[in-house]
Length: 244
Length: 247
Image 1 (cartoon, chains in turn purple, cyan):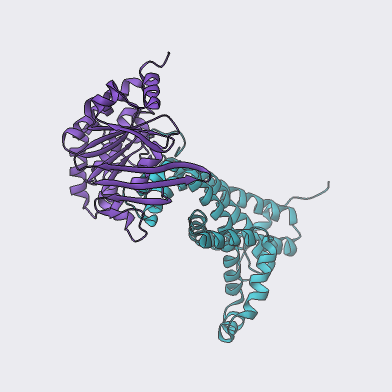
Image 2 (cartoon, rainbow over the protein chains, first blue to last red; image 1 turned 90 degrees about the vertical axis):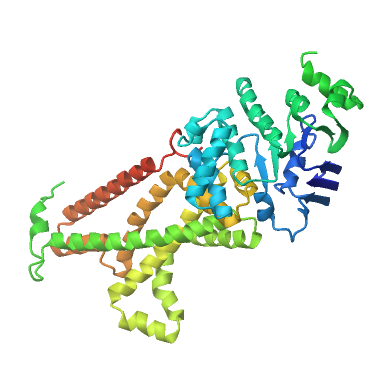
């Protein structure tokens, strides 16, 4: 579904992605983790070309996203993206946030789009908030709406860029639960997160990134119980016992 | 100071038909509104297009908009008006020139010049406000719009501009008032708008103080009404759950 072939990216002198090779199969859930500044957010943003790359290839659903001839709008319509800071449209109601892109990008009519939006809101447990505006919602609710907004395009892949990092602790669970349901429905997912509980329970594979390179790639059980690389060990230690 | 105020002057006959001096002010106000409103609509359209251009990734388009702003912002309004009224017509094609200078009613040709001048001058200022409105939005908004597959025009139309315009209502209001005040330059090319009628009344009646007091009052009430209208608009489009417009 997604394939990185020797991908490089520089921000001026900083080599943020240094020879990334990675594959995500259809229906697979891959969690990307790593220390801050390791390049994991940049990595996930290259998949739908919110960040361009300097070298290499990224294939998504049979299309090379770095090829200037690829229709990026069409590609992005098939790739859902959930941001750390939700990025809902503040001037639109919850319902309109969800219906806007199906109507404008796919030409869906208002009645069908509304119906689909309500179904999606039920799925994320927020049908009663359809007429609210984003500023009236908690962070966790906003992120669930953002997931519904992504799903409204019926994407083939969903990308999550630290979806719970901006949330208060008591709201993390509700978002992770929606993501877990989504994974169980068979959605192909690539998730950048520090939620190791989620990784352990839901992921098919964990990818550890540091200094723009994939250092370790393993089944979650192996990754958590028996990390191979020193930096992965250190990262896990800091994450699991931050005070020591 | 020894001055005999005579407020009845406005109800005295001008000597032309049954006209009284107050009629001159009413007609002047009519021209002022006709100039400012039309120029404002044009300025808003051109300024918005330019403002969007300035935020585009395309260097050529943003460069053109920047050059426009610098040109129109750095030359005095009055100089621009004289250029539009006295110079530009001479460079028009022969037939247009004859039409503009001879066939048109002089008031109409002055009107066209002043509307073009004010619209283009104000467009540069509107452009800067639209640009800052767009740039004030969090980067995540354009990322979110692009991520769902919107084209650039769709992103501006549905996501960026509705938020940007809400943010810039207060400075736009101030520009809206400015165009009414700036329209008084038209008096210098013979368009009988409010200021020109005031000066004429002052000359005809020698009641200069009354004439200018009334003009001041009319401008003040006019602008206060516009301001009230704009704050009503601002409330009307306010986003529920947010303090004073978009974040």
